Length: 469
Image 1: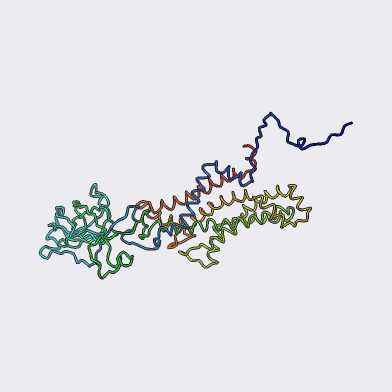
Image 2: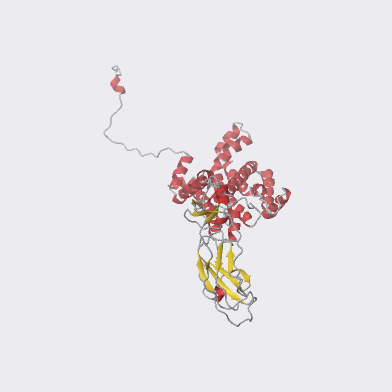
């Protein structure tokens, strides 16, 4: 038998001419894999961008759009969205006594069956958004005149529009209109009367008032530095209202930003609190089981049966919130105390499954206490379900706030919220629909975005989806 001494060459790697192809999947954590699946869901990603845009709109929007949401501009009441406007600087309003013809009888000698229509109906001076002054020639046989205003050309005698007022006397041949004037075409009609009844003849004139602003208003809004040295007739650029103004002339965009803070504050803070309550409550109920579980869940069933609106009213009374006052705090309390059972039931069902897993039993054998197992192992493994629950709870809370504010039980004017703005916009939706459309669109987009994001998270966080791909 010969001795063999190993050399360094004996320990060199073996070479092979056969190529081996290795196919392996990169190791991904649960959250990394969920994010990859979420990115494949186009609707969920678009919804995520919308949610981030709403956060930017709410938090940083007022920095870029620095307009006071409570500032009233009575010269731009219920203005539709438009480009920037200019106004002519004028002095304070001067009372107008009108025109009364001394050489014309106030009362006719007799009352004829018919008279002629007024002639030479014209503006007395430049028509502005401060006042429109009309004059005309007197009509023989007339004992007075009725004045109407329409926003379109009248088609017949019964289509003259809004009755503005009357003159008492056939020699009073002027009228001044100061009722909510805007820089838009108006059709004024003058109808002769016998003092009681109208003659079915009329004269129509189209008038478009010019946008003006007084020295005092321009100084208050800091459009001019010194009202004493400013010259009337100067053209000034007014504030830009891209979303228009409301019925008090307040900027809609600024109010939507401030309203978003109220609506999203209630829609995010309240669900966050009651979801945490439901997590802890459902986690302990599911882990301990037995009698404790039965007692805790029967109490949850009792809370579910409580009427939300009734308790909202009781909380408002308890906190001394009267009619016309904002009930933000009572609304938060009602949401937190009455809406947690749904989350508790969902978390309890997950905990009942997880507590039987092998790693939970191993931790229990190593001496882990129940509260440690619940908070350290069980609840973190239900985070997928919790996130989905939260994304669905947020739009539900936003819609609840909008509904309560719409019926006058939530946020009350002048504090804006999307719901209270809808409540105000309903009153003018036929004549000025933008006051209702914009807050309603923001509510709809927000609720839809959170719901679609919740659907995407449901699919992305489902571990069973990983095995199917």
